[in-house]
Each structure stands twice: as structure tokens, then as C-alpha cells.
Amino acid sequence: MTDGILIGIDAGTSVIKSVAFTAAGEQIASAAIPNSYEMLADGGSEQDMARTWADTAKTLKQLSEKIPGLAEKLIAIAVTGQGDGMWLVDKAGDPVAPAWLWLDARAAPIAEDFIASPAYAEHYQRTGTGVNACQMSMQLAWMTRHRPEVLARATTAFHCKDWLYFKLTGDRAADPSEANFTFGQYKSRSYAPAILDLLGASDSKRLLPPIVEGTERAGKLTGEAAALTGLKAGTPIVMGYVDVVCTGLGGGLFDPQGQTGCTIVGSTGMHMRISPSASDVKLNAERSGYTMAFPVPGMYVQIQSNMASTLNIDWLLDVMRGVLEQQGVERTRADLLKGMDERLLACAPAEILYHPYISKAGERGPVMEPSARAMFTGLEMGHGADHMMRAVFEGLCFASRDCYAAMGSIPAEVRVTGGAARSKALRLMLASTLKARVRSVNREEAGAAGAAMMAAIQQKLYPDMEFCAAQWVDPQLGGVTEPDPHLARVYDSAFPIYKETREVMRPVWRKLAEHRREASNGA
Image 1 (spheres, rainbow, N blue to C red):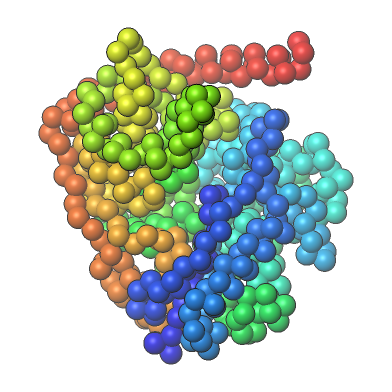
Image 2: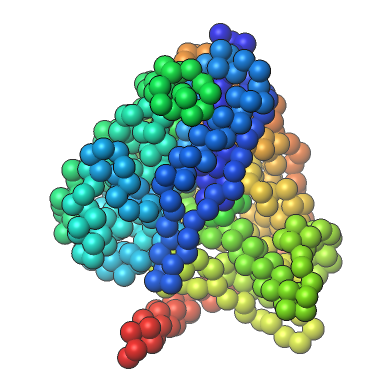
């Protein structure tokens, strides 16, 4: 069946998409539906679970309409999706509450208290992962304290892709990446959910589904799901790893020597490098970042993530749009981005510093600071919107350098993917900030491709991931952006100031957070 088709589902924060590939890795067609979620006044971020499944099924149905004979040609489907969060279902498999997303900040005080406790160091050593408000462990603790009646109705706690895998197959399962960095021990790739005991949420351990290795086992598409999607019942369904791992895999991260990095410039910023074995994992003094299983035996990916990446760009674009709308002028984000690269490169570098902490959940990498908030430093008369946007771009690059430095030396080459990676200005700034080659990846749907690559291994279309990556990834690697020597010197000078400003502001952010809590309580 090497002339057949593989489908990768990538249920992201912004878009839910299904992408069809040949067995050799060529993208054939895709179908996408914008995702929808609600931001609540109390810092919550929720998503309708039934709608998420319905939208996912629609994208598969649309693919079956676009590709003649898809059902007969289909080898397997693999599913990945946005990470962290909490998707609770009852015994019948129905949602007991809206899903909580990674953007949800309600558990921030619980995360802060746990990070400050003596138990945190042991948890970090076990999982290789820092704690933050968006993780299921923190959210389950919040539910235990504030909505125990919801947890009482729940029988399984899923992440996003787990929920979709369940709706496709009827099987309740988790993948090794999210199960381990949240509740496990990375060296053995098994559950060790002591954190729930420490948080007073021991009963929630019953909600954790069994861990399934997607490169080895597949479920089967149910008759109900087949009717909704136009596909054949019994089609193999593969549980992918979390979206960041699949995006890294599809975006060129696989490197048995661990000399290549991968940065995803998406809603959140992910900065990754391979650890060929557990003994190569390097933990840091801040006790931040992620250590995740990689879909290759014995291999791990270390990740530092700045909570918000392109969300900072979207925020400033929306501020500009709001000003225009008040004057009766309507513009889209795409309208404002036209010619942006040229305008930004015409501005002087690093005149303004921007710390890209626009998320209400604060920052998680490389510093663990739930109270952190975005800010400009150095604004003066004569600075305009383009100067501020250049500072935002540079702030994302400084955040990337900050993250890579926490994992050891900066890789010699960093491969970039994600929507903003198309910007030549951003690639030049990133290369110059990191003082490393930056290579674009032409693969548009790296997350879906990475999931499909896992299905290709599970279906034994390739002997191992190295053979698969040579076929699927290497031909998609684009041109190299070299560091600009002048910019590199400017950024070398500005980066220590960026870090110093952040450290000086940490107690201020905490006081501001306390002020806001008192003000919201009417104190």
C-alpha cells in the first residue's frame, strides 16, 4: 500500500485541520476550520468539546470530498493537537464541562505555591518539566478545590488529541509525551502521579487513561465516526504525540547527534533540541522547560517555551486595527502585515526592548513567572507603530535565545516553522540574535506531517524514523539565513539588558498581580 494515503489531524489553538499525504510525504490536500474558544473574565479559557469533535469530523469529510476514492486509498489517520489543558468526560464519554485550554490562568496561584514548595525540586527531577498554570495537574487541583462536583461526574481526563482519538476509536488513551511531562517519570516513560497527592487531588489519579505508543499500536475507526467522515470503519487510527513534538518531527528536529534545533513561531513559542538518550537530558537551575518523550526509542526532546509568541504580534496588530476602527476604517491583520518586513528592517535595531509576556498565564520558559506581563522599555518621542512592532519581533528572538541558553549551548542550526517563520525580517533577527544559521522549512503543515510520519512507522512503511525523515523532511528544508554581523553585535549588547530588566521586574509583577487581585475582590 505504499501508493496509499496517510492523514494527519492537527487540532491547534487557532485552526483545526486535516491534511492528506502520500506515503512518500507529499502533501495532497488539506481541509481546515477556524477553532473557537472563549476567554473568561476570571482568566479562564474554555473550548466546546462537542464542537471540536464536530469540526474535526467535518475536515475529514471535506478531505473525502476533495480526494476521489480516499476511503479506499487511506492507509491510516494520526491525530495530534494543542498541548496541556483538561478535557473531562463521564462514563458514557460525554463532556462534563467545557475543555480548559493551555491559555487558562485560573490555576496560576496553585502553580506559584507549588513552585515555592520543597516538593517542587523532586517533581522536576522526576518529570524533567517545570510546572505552570496551564498543565492538567494544576487544573485538576483547582477543580478539586473549587468544583468537586464536576470531577465527581468525570471518569477520564483527556488532553485535546486524546479526546479526538477517543471520538475516532472509542478508546480512552494518552500518549507518552503529555502523560509523562505532566504526571510521569521521563526516564521510564510511565506514570508516577505523585504531584496529585501533593496538591490534595489524589482522587484525580483515577482519571488518567492508559499510555499508548502510537508508533507501535493503532486503534480502529468506529462505525459512527466513519459515517460522519465518509471513511471506512476499521481504518487504523494512530495516537500522535502532542502537537509541539509532531511539529518538531515534521519540521526537521530529528537528529541522532542532537546538533540541530527547531523553533516553532506559533501562538506560543517552542524551542527544541534532541537528547539522544535520557543521560543527555540537561536540567536547569530555574527548574523550567519540558522534557518530552520523542517518537523514537530512547530519544527525548528538550523544550523551552515562551508562553506567547505570535499572540504578541496579533495583540499589537489588533491595537492598530482598533484605532482605525474608531475612525471608521476597517483593516484585517493581513492588511496591516503587507510590507511589514521592509518597514521593520528600516527601523534601528534594539532601540526599544519588549518582553513578550502578553499571556494572562504569565511566562513559563526559561523563567517560571505566572505574574509576568508584557512591557516596552525605552519608548520615546519619534517612535511609532513600526518601531514598536520591530521591538516585538526582537523580543520574540531574545526569548528564543533565553530559552536555548537554558538547555545548554545554542545549536549550530535552528530550523524554523510556524506562520511567522515566513517573515524574512524575523528570520534575520533570529539568526543574528542566536548567532546561528536559521533554516526555513517549506513544509506548511509540519504538525500534521509529524503525526502522519508516526502512522507511517506504525504501519511499517519505513524501517525506522531516520529513513522516514530522509523521505519526508529533508526535501522540505529551505534556504539558510546567516547572522548579520552588525545585528549580532547589537543584539549581543542588548540581550543582557533584556535579561536584567526581566529580573528587576519580577517583584514588581508580583506586586501588581496582588494589587489586581485585591482590586477585583473590592478590597
